[in-house]
Each structure stands twice: as structure tokens, then as C-alpha cells.
Image (cartoon, rainbow, N blue to C red):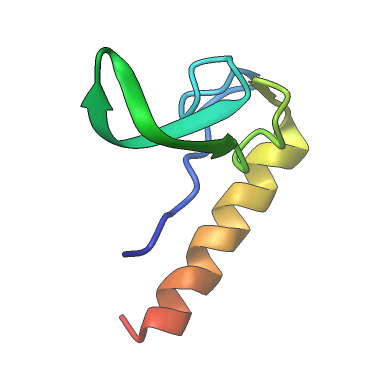
Length: 69
């Protein structure tokens, strides 16, 4: 599985972690996700700046090339 970054359209609250700075994935057990870690789309701050957005877009372009798409 490939985890693409999620660049915001505008600077502000991170759309991937919803402003918490922690990305959670997997099944939900008692309302809590089974896996979590720092959000790489916002570098764990909960907010994406213009430089974060540019980095995420670049990362996704390179990831697609690596996948051979």
C-alpha cells in the first residue's frame, strides 16, 4: 500500500490529520484507530504552510513515477 501525502488547497489546518498532528489509520476499536503516527503532510504541526503544500505535491509526483504509473 502506498500512502500519498494530502496537500491542502490553501494554507491552514491539515486535511490529513484534521489539525491534530497525528495520522491514524487501520480499523477502529472502541472509537480509536489501531495505528497512529506523526502526520508527514504537515510535519506533525497540524497546519500546512505553503512550503508544506509544495513539498507534498512534489512527493506525490515522485511517488507516482516510482510506482511506474
